[in-house]
Image (cartoon, rainbow, N blue to C red; front, top):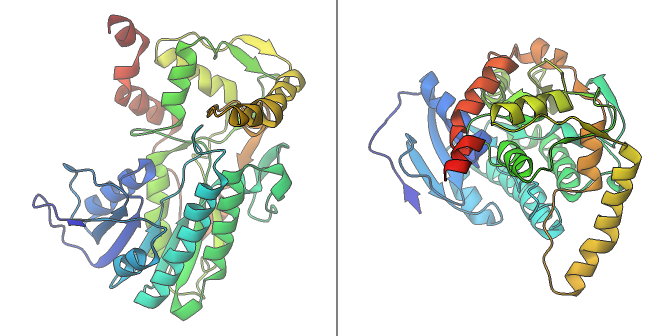
Length: 360
């Protein structure tokens, strides 16, 4: 099904397809592409978001190879942003993660080659190199995480990225991959809503570990900016970007619990302040994953929780990344600093503020 908006017909030079254009990152990317005036944008997603100023919208499924191939026809550039997000419900669904993040990516690559697409920018994740140990300003030479150390989402993103990078040069296609870390901003469906929900339940008064560990957070608008800059610099498989992955963050590491405290406080809830030992909490999370979840399944109950060993490691380890390669190869410098980005985010989610919930 194709939906065409009568509201806007941008004058552009390149035709592009954005998979997952109705999602969190995709919406920001589509908006910036249109605002630049240099792109004719088509969105491919499982759902349409009417009322947005998109020139063309194709409703389809990444798992359907023919739908993807048809959507890629005639495109100059494909931004493959769509993913099976690691929500509490999805995180334990290995089949979904593999079908969308791996099979869907292969369908996009095949569609690009068959359709004569010149450029493919793949949206990956900084988590592809995270094994649960400290990462401090690591660059792209850091090896992929071992399968045994990661969850289904991370493993399938690793596989998807490998496919995208290996496709560089296939049929003249140029590819690159971007690895944002800790994305936040307007239209977020995961970090802010989950944080507010947990804070409202009194689950975010605790700090796991020392509380001094730092993490790179990335404003979603800067992620969109990086995609456009990478695409415009991706001039053929032999250019510096061809077949390469890049970390893109706000380049302003913050302590994990300090940033979470800023979100909680901004939404009207207390900052985390009670420290709990990492070892104890990690052990409990392992028990939940290895014993409680399987038991619930045997009893016919679907247990959904973001209290997993992988999530616990993220909260207590250093995870910072170097953006030097992105600066060098396509001039990436984040335009919106963390403090301004946080203000925008809190304003967007004002309806979730604690005071509004109490009145409701």
